[in-house]
Length: 179
Image (cartoon, rainbow, N blue to C red; front, side):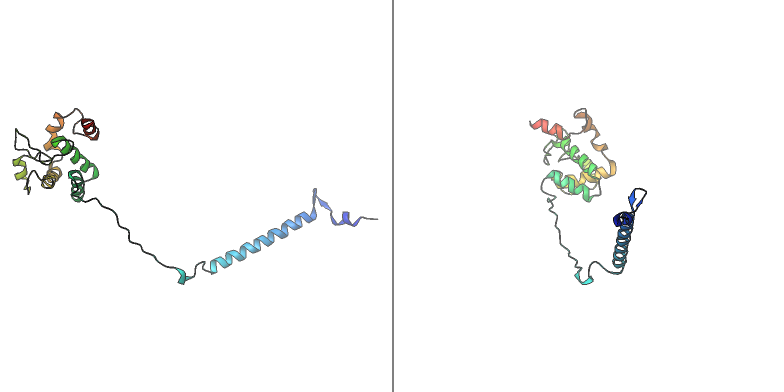
């Protein structure tokens, strides 16, 4: 007598034949589901057109006023004049070297006609058609930017060499002076 179970489960290379058939059927079933899903995805929109809404929100940036102090005025004015941030920082260093770390707009050289934050002498002021009072930090800065754009740091080179060996006053020198 032949056992029906043995006849039904014949082996093929050590694996039961029904295992291969089951795997093939499951693979075909998964492939069919994937094909239907991909077909439907290309023919339907995931979002209905009437549910799309544009939301525009106004964002305002907080700006420090340009005339808050001499340093902020130098930064703003140099940017308005089309100078780089590096040039703006150089102008601040020059002003600190010329009139002190706190940038004194009313600084006056007792041995020459140099006045203001950048210590501009009267001849330079007039030859560059600068307006306003030389001891007004806005007028002095505007004139200094005009000169800087034309001649670079050349008008202040002597000052750079008379200061510390590193050139114009930098942040560390100013902080050391007050500590």
